[in-house]
Length: 245
Image (cartoon, rainbow, N blue to C red; front, side, top):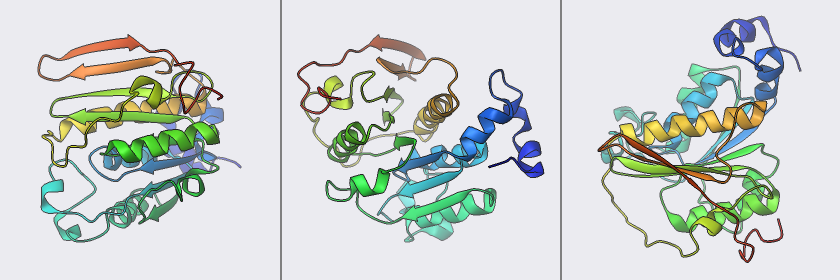
């Protein structure tokens, strides 16, 4: 695999960063990322992954756009109301960057299909909005030994961590009991947008092999007082999901 003249020009500014260059960009071009969810997190995640030149990007979401989504789900436009989130998002991403491989999967992520959906990927992005599916994805990523970048938001606050099987705690280590689901919770569109950018940064660093990731750390942000906290988190040796990872 080689970089085209178009690649060299399009991605020039990021390739100028230390330890990136053509070698790093080739790693991105050969990488496969799955984005689970095309909502407030998944839309900007997918857009900036496409902008960076990820080789193959798969977007999974079974829902359709509603008007109440449009304050934060930036790949959903008024013309997309009633249409598939995954397909509408990929349609725009394909127009934005036609030189990457894009795949829309209009399915519900379950215990029965999750392994087939993520198998062979380099990184999985948790852009989901419910805990049940998050824990299904977490367990599958541990078993498949695929890094999972988790983020969750509420209002003006949220958290992010990188789960790397065998190197740090999984989501079940961090949250032993499944939290109650909240169907409609408050959210300012900028909040998932902010955490989506952090997820993209984590994905780029993992693929290229630069910087220090959030493995073993939970980064918390409260937008009301613009306060960051980084908490060290450890593996649970008795975790039912990752103790043998």
